[in-house]
View 1 (cartoon, one colour):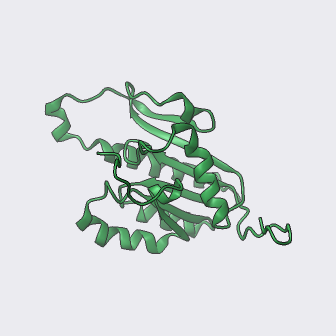
View 2 (cartoon, one colour):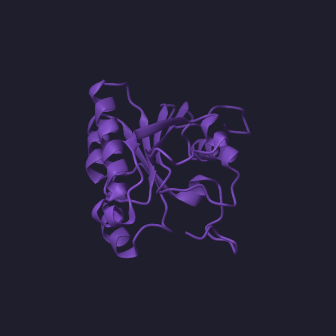
Length: 190
């Protein structure tokens, strides 16, 4: 909103759909969980995205608890009821990839419904969403990205993230999308 003359200055009023991989983009310790939704909404609005906001939290393990404050304004999707792998299984399974694959499939299914133009946002520390970003854009939607640069492998980030971020109409670090400073002394240790 333009405070000087009271006019709406949003350049984009499309609805924004967010697929949040909570295991890869954790809520920082210095942010109350109840503030995730309003902070993302505020960041979007400050950058000109004034449409409605819907956030889907995507979780893998059936025993992972999602704090109640997050569920007040966001929906929860359990990929499937995957049991937590044993230590020996962990080395063989890439659980992060399961959630990524689910997000890609869920977005693809959504695209097949031929929705009117939306903004599609994926907060993640993984950078392998280039194909789905291209599909989203090809169907007339905007692609937005929030990346957790503290959890992204630095070498992978330099190569793959640069390609992915070029596809994004707008991008933020995960902390910036939550309205937080880049670093702080008691930063969430991962």
